[in-house]
Amino acid sequence: MFINEINKMNYIVICITQGHFGMESVQDPCMMLNNYLFNQVLFFIGITNIPSLEDSLALEQNRYGDLVQEDYIDSYRNLTHKAISALKYISLHCSHVTYVLKTDDDVFVNIFALLQYLVNIDRNSSKESGVISSPRHQEDFISCLIWHKMQVDRNPESKWFVPNGIWNETYFPPYCSGAAFLTSGRTVEKLFQMASKTAFFWIDDVRGWN
Image 1 (tube, one colour):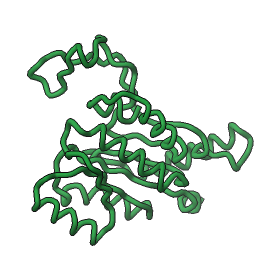
Image 2 (cartoon, rainbow, N blue to C red):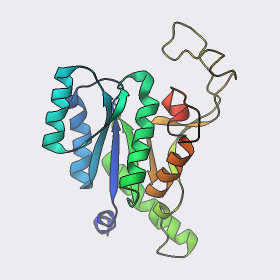
Image 3 (cartoon, one colour):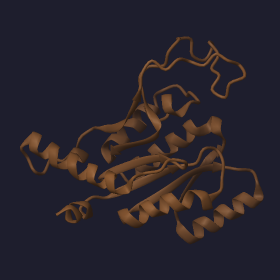
Image 4 (cartoon, rainbow, N blue to C red):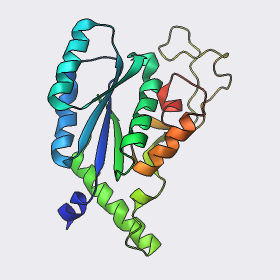
């Protein structure tokens, strides 16, 4: 029964590289996800301006067809652009998917726990609604770790330094951790619509996915 329920679902796994490349290090965990989920794993990348890397990426794309590249410099400070490009791509080309899992390339995903969780939330939402055809993936939802009262870093030497002129409040509003989260295809569309109307902020956890 578990396998039958899994096979009815369509998944996309978004793997976000942290402003660096090394596809061999990214491929192992993400391809393992692909092998178990029998669906699509996508890597969202920007422009590197390094010919040797661009050549490697072209080879990757020709072999696996799993890259989505857009016109921004691929760097840590541009992760919000990368996040929005993922939202856009899924909205325009894959909005029919059941679930979307976004994960960073340095995050380990417990595949079996994830699959069991997906089956459980579909079962529970069907019981709650009383309608077997209304699973959670047809609703608006995000499953994530929520950060509360995260203080804005004012240390100029810090990697995450944010001056008052960019963000003048002491704390960020509650937001999903960008390390990994699960959502539905229809929710991705709404996230992209909202992102298109929201001012750019370079910390992607705070802005890109929220």
